[in-house]
Length: 264
Image (cartoon, rainbow, N blue to C red; front, side):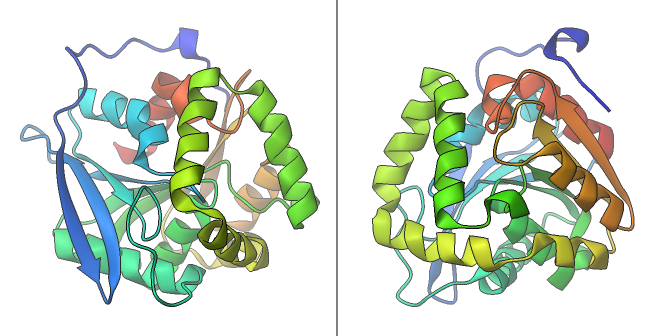
């Protein structure tokens, strides 16, 4: 399936979504939860999870689009990111996925649509595998790590190419979040990202999977995303033509439409 921004009806809203913020501590790990609650819908809440090094800030436009569609939307900042305290111990993908599941349980949202971008795709898939009762479906956007880039050098090259293609505003958000994350925590998580085999995990999913990629994403290639789709029990692939790895910022309406098509 292919979606273009021009093909979609504009959402109507006045200003950004109203957001409340809280901190949730799980076993020594600090999470930040930003919530836009819709009182008018019984549809599942949509929970957004960022990727390595960054925070909810590059998901803000998508958050607003989904909230404008009268959905309850939650953006989660993970431990060590977005200015949150760095954990005192190493946190691999299964450990982060388990803690994220406990956050969802504590929020008492009912089964949710769980969305992860980039490395966030690994964390949300892991949560879906450990706690499927907490989810109606899982969405991975720009999933990593494409096996064409499964070394630090190749990941750095793909990221550098994407940086040249993204709008300046995206790069400003990502760069300042990287600085807040810091090199040691970034490299710790990069090691886990490269070691995690997403292609071995998605076949075990018991909830529907939606894969989204920017049509010109140099990090999550088309063949890689097709493989994930074909290996999962129930999966669809949507492309956003002309956009890159951070399409949720450059084409938030198109990405929101794809998510809502699964979440309705």
